[in-house]
Length: 107
Image (cartoon, rainbow, N blue to C red; front, side, top):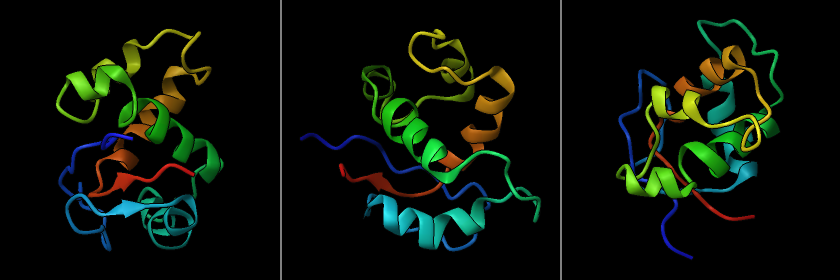
């Protein structure tokens, strides 16, 4: 399976991984998710949902590959409701979480 994402800067997230390092869901949950909480505010979104959005759309979609490895917020928001059932406000919450330095590893 081809690399499903390009490395991005850590977006200010402490504890981000090295460029291009593959991360499984379990690693995401243990090491990255706790650092993704917005200024200490706990996300109302379940980490599995955030992981799925990053893996399936932000970093793992055809559009992401064509964009150089990851969708920007505007491109992510433009995805149709048939692709992602999340609301725009939920997508805005997920998108900054994707700006960390890791490659998704298929489960």
